[in-house]
Length: 267
Image 1 (tube, rainbow, N blue to C red):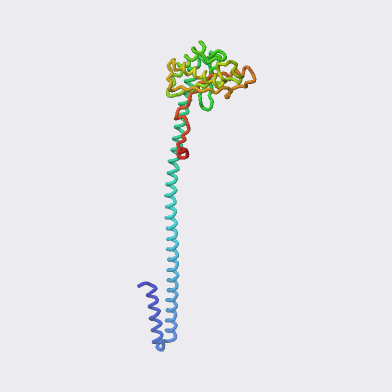
Image 2: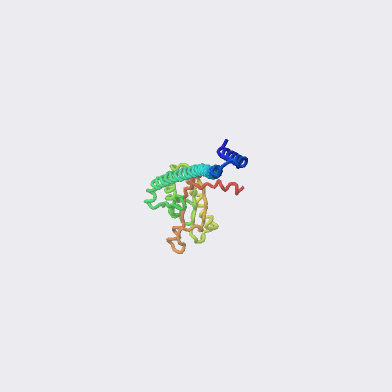
């Protein structure tokens, strides 16, 4: 039996006793019983107040427990997200490091190739430049061809033989031979225009490189005519620079940007 039930029972018993035997009590006894009833009522009120306070504390603790459980779930969720973020950061770091290593290897390869051309550069027969990430070997047309001709000169053959010896030491690389002219119209009837002259000169270079041992599967020829000048055609010096043959070291597939994400959009 709980304290509240006991107190309530006692109050009922006292009240009943007082009612049934009121005439048998003296005034002092009567007041004493009333005080006892009042004390018991106060105890009952205190018990009710304590029960209410305990219930409120239980409710507060339950709410706090639920809140802490929610925080724990949030922390687990955040931990999972942080782990995913860390994995992504690690992936990006690894990719950046891989690209950095590739770039360093590519730069070392370019430097080694440039060193192989050193003697020809110093002799003035060619120059090497980097354009949009590509190494370009550039030779003046007057080194390779007589004026207005697509037939190689003796100096041109010697120069291309030395060039071929270097190209054959460069693995896993294709070479595009590009012919360029100035903007002076063709004076002879052999070639229709500068398009044809630049293309025939590029083909002559490709055919000779193949003859001296460069694999034809890594060679290509293109003529740009007068439409990709590197200098001003208004001066003789500028026109001389524009009359040129370029051998472009084409990028490998692993040097090109990854466009796989666009595959679905192009189908």
